[in-house]
Image (cartoon, rainbow, N blue to C red; front, side, top):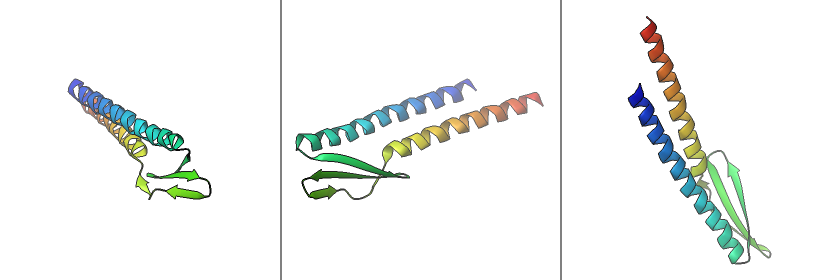
Length: 96
C-alpha cells in the first residue's frame, strides 16, 4: 500500500510540474501578443483550445489544438480516483 502511495505521489508531482510548464507557455503566448500590440483571447471547448490574437480588424486564429491543461487535470483526477478505488478494494479484501 505504501509503494502504491509513493507511485501516485510521484505521478501527481510529474503532472503538476507538467501543468506548470503548460500554463507558463500559455502565459508566454498571451504576453507575446501584448508585446506585438495585439489583444489575445482564448476559447475553450472540452479538451480543445483556440487561441486568437486581434489587432485592428484582422483576427489571427490558431487551429483548434489539444488543451494540455485539461488533459493533465483529467489525468490527475483519473490517477487519484484509481488510487482511492484500489486502496478501498484492498481494505475490503483484508477484512475478509
